[in-house]
Image (tube, rainbow, N blue to C red; front, side):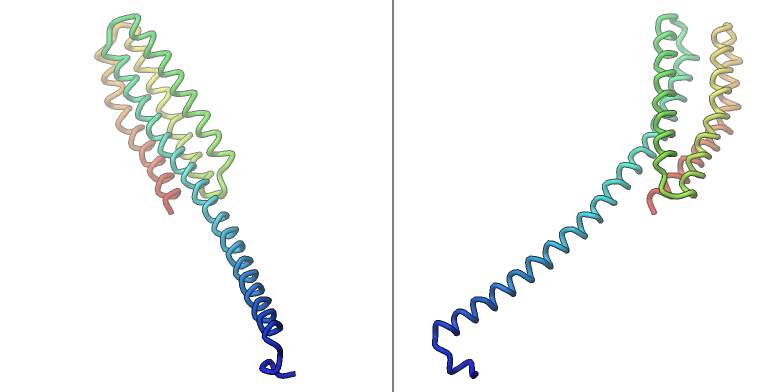
Length: 171
């Protein structure tokens, strides 16, 4: 049967069905493309959240150092009580964040980097507490010396561990 020999109504019908099939196939291709881009966007959002959390670890670690130094130089008992409470709260926040990052780490390499941050914090916390004990005993010079000497080396280790984690997350 020759297409030219069909009546105009049938030719229009065949053309309409052809256009409908084309639109339907383009709709399916578009839906598939949206679904695959949605999965990619979900991965980007998840990674951005993990990157934000890794940056928060750095912020909390810096807050702890500032809090300890503030504690050492401020002689008012009420302010020291507030700073000690802030220090405990910040330590709880960083510990919770590191626990979450460890539990949700997608690779063993990332878990190792997070463990390095935890280990670095484990070294700096006793040094901070030791400096606070000196300050509480009225030995302010020794407290500042402890923070200055011990803080430099522990801060370098901690900052390197956090920088390594941020660099890994940025990949």
